[in-house]
Image 1: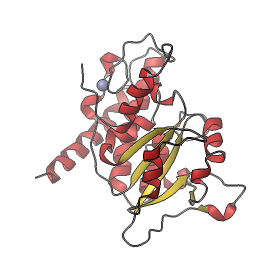
Image 2: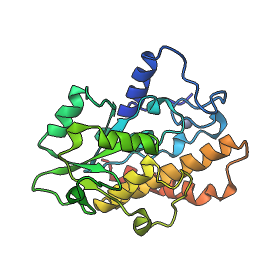
Image 3: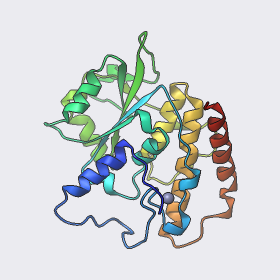
Length: 250
Ligand SMILES: [Zn+2]
């Protein structure tokens, strides 16, 4: 059994599970899964997981049972960037005090990542422009599309921040993006795009690769077929990334 990485999403998941009054029945819940990567046990991808560093921070606001879903991709961000990813359950009226403290921390410059802002178009931006000494904090609304829209419209504590709207098609510089989440990008793909916008190409690429491997194996698990043999380039990319980041460490 692989150790479960100690990061914000996994901690939130454990807590959310502890307060559940009934067992969470995930889609595909009868499958024996690796507790760390949530893939079918025999297709565990943990050995390929890169651990990276980024200047940018991510603040995940997760809708209700989202942290418990094996298909959740917000977790993949914390997998790759455990030191700079925070996760909170969303609440309209009672946001977690640590969330409010993070949003008020002068070290960070928050952006809400969302595709539109009809009520206040002036909040929309396509760029990350940082004040001196600040690092970007990207707030991601993690849930289904209607849930994300609800979180965006009903979180008064987010109203003062600019809204970063990404254009994923223009940004898929690596040519490896796989479309599988309705017409919208998954949370991890959004984060990979945002890292590119912020100029953190290596972290963005690493997250995209990790997402691609996860989603391929996850989909294969759902369809009870073997992961495609064409994942070799992905594994090669992740191996190269791990070797490169390992070499940077003392
Ligand atoms: Zn695993």
